Length: 94
Image (cartoon, rainbow, N blue to C red; front, side):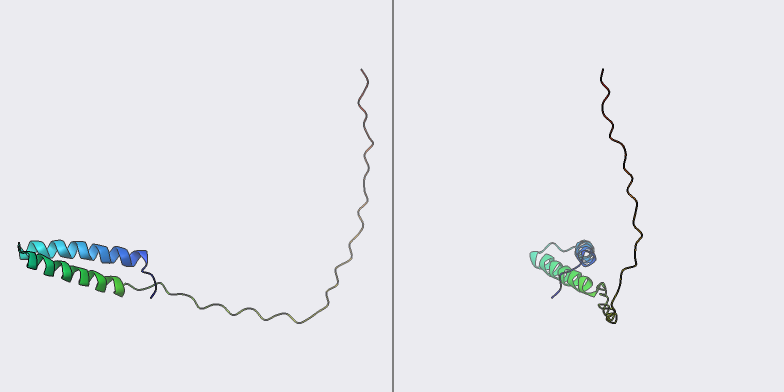
């Protein structure tokens, strides 16, 4: 099973929090059993929302380019570069 994405975690968590608050405020329950049922329903709703968030699509791997035909490559001839020699400079005597 793949790991949930950040969007799935955020949507699921927000759904659990807001649906719990809404159901508690609307039902005005104070019994332990009523609060447990509301909490369970909110968790189920949050899980449902988190799992229905679309997953990012993975792109199929591109097929590698076909190998070029075996050709013998000869490097282009290069022109020789003339070396320039600078005279050696000796320090002047004081």
